[in-house]
Length: 286
Image: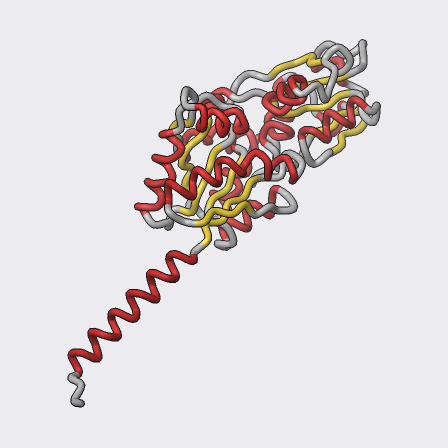
């Protein structure tokens, strides 16, 4: 039987198309997050959101934990993951490292005016000035709400944590900071207000014992970020999926409650210019 070149080419194109489709169907969309809480808690928080995103983008979605904040930056830049839940400072670091190739898609409404709290068990500490000569724990060095912004507001209050405090420590995560304060390892600690409120609600901390003595002014913080070169259609599907979440729908409320928000809103890189300035001012970004 004589086979024409045309039919061979057509068959080849069909085979390539089916192989491409199979590849697309097999592709896993990998998501990660800065490890600002225990890994088991991050997995628990993400599970319903991951299942929701799978339906919206038509791809399998997997959560990929990372060891530290720096690893989340490198994972996105080096295409090990496709989307990351960044803090404001980690986004700035990722954008700086990639020379502007990271795009923040959405943030929680609460992240427009996010805050940090300083907590203590010491009855003699009632203001930032009272921290002089005391010990203080931050979270991770790369944490916006657990280090950068608390450090920034200490400096604004004319307190240099490196010279005016007896000792500073880094717990690695917000819940670990509270544990260090509650356990008497440090006189005070600075952390994310959202994690603080969650710990109080879950009765994992007694606010009559570990109490807030200072709350910072608001600043932009967390966002969901992707690489700028991501397929535009996928980028739009992801954005639309987050924006479509409705707290009045029972199935969406489960997701929103775990994410500790009432709604997601669009965001942009320009929103984080003040975080970048604060990082440079504190000597944490060159």
